[in-house]
Image 1 (cartoon, one colour):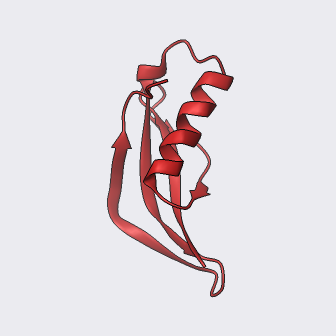
Image 2 (cartoon, helix red, strand yellow):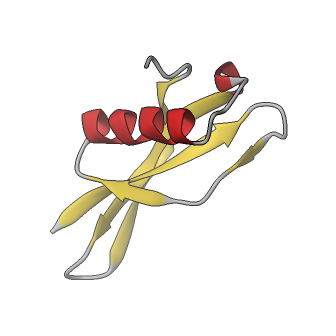
Length: 77
């Protein structure tokens, strides 16, 4: 089973957060939106969601993106 790997990039600190998995970009966007809402982030436009690869849970292999792929900048609640 494969799942995509995502991270949230903080433009202000210029660092990415922990890597997490989702089935596809739409689920990742929903999770990103929920995280922003639940965390009560006041500067949501400081964050961007990126896809960084995929993970195969059977072989335990990571297949990285050639370059991090921006999914969305500002979450829309």
